[in-house]
Image 1 (cartoon, rainbow, N blue to C red):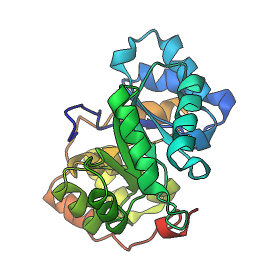
Image 2 (cartoon, rainbow, N blue to C red; image 1 turned 30 degrees about the horizontal axis):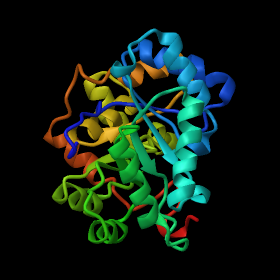
Image 3 (cartoon, helix red, strand yellow; image 1 turned 180 degrees about the horizontal axis):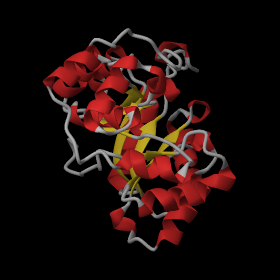
Length: 266
């Protein structure tokens, strides 16, 4: 990352993972080799993520943990309070990455919130800081009103929403792009192009898609609660997509979201 810290390119997301399944899912993911966990205050499972990490017996420094401040906690002082609550729920002394979950532009608080994140980074309680769901316009304002560039911009990104313009902007400013909904919420399972590429390599469409993200240089956080799928999603380093595969996937881009546009979320 642009601050000198490293982030595992493949992570494990826990969005919409029920509290009573989160600890076991995290344990399965860590056993499968994941070393990057992505949660958020909104997900209401930070405590269970922390319990999973503790139960794994892994050294804290071996697991990269991300969480996020939700929209209703934006603003300088409120963000600092929200961070304290997240850190307490996780049972940790620090997080590796803290993100503004959405810009919520109509609130007009994300620059103030960003200044609070800078304080957390200076204190060492958030090793790295970044944003989520920021467009180039949001980023341009942040860069104009701050001396600190986000380390990461986590956005919806998958074969039908490839975010080429945004990824280019991020790269030009030294910001890593990270993909949420990397498998388009299951849409990959019904796609003829991905199925054909999967048969060619003897893998699944999900593995093809995760491999595509990795070869694009994107940080990717697939999610599942099924142990076999958690392990399969991590088994993506034994094959490589060729130029024909990449060209075929590029043609799937249609600008189609599974979630909301960042300007519409408050």
